[in-house]
Image (tube, rainbow, N blue to C red; front, side):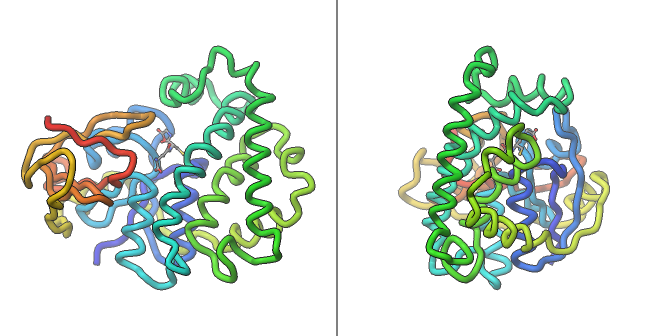
Length: 304
Ligand SMILES: N[C@@H](CCC(=O)N[C@@H](CS)C(=O)NCC(=O)O)C(=O)O
């Protein structure tokens, strides 16, 4: 099998989710560092325009969004599982909590209180994070602190009966979901120590999740990742489920875009449309033929 290539940057909280998943599974992977702001020409050549971080590449298959990446890692490398106690559906449902309700006040606090953020990143994220009102951000800070602190309390409660991990003795994707906004908080939010003070069970659990590590990785140049795509064939298999909306056939020209922020449309020829995933074929001189994968939940598919 082709190597796992993660396109990411160190300070990305969503990329930290995938680095921990790779660690939990004890995998070897290659690391391509991508720019923190647009333009990202060597990344968008692979994705067809999708700009968010992270993106996983295996050969000529390109996986966008941490939900899609987690499910694909589990499919290809089932043991140890990311979803103990049959928790895959529960974890995907709860990613709506962590990726939105928990992450968003944390992102607001990061933007509003991290004085070290360079101006080009602030400028980019003002456009990108459409769930934040930057004009009133200063005034919203007390509310954002209150919301983030209330989510931290939920995490403290999840482990308050003395369990090691959210579902019991073994870690999984649910732990990673609950952990990554806290990882972002530690790195970015002024008053992180105040927010976390007194949450002793959360802090002990946080150390256990951190201890999962990132697996073993070696750096790869972005140009080499493009060459891997060019010289490999995609492995994705066609599947259009009968009761899908919109009603489309294989090879239909479509555009796929996230329904939330960073909604850059990606155009291609439909290969997969199920209730859990979307995949489109694309071709370019830089990449050869690639298949770009997205989760179904949270993504819009329209005729091009
Ligand atoms: N739903 C996406 C969200 C990813 C996301 O918002 N990532 C942030 C970074 S942590 C991002 O893309 N920031 C802008 C950028 O990297 O250009 C996922 O789960 O992967």
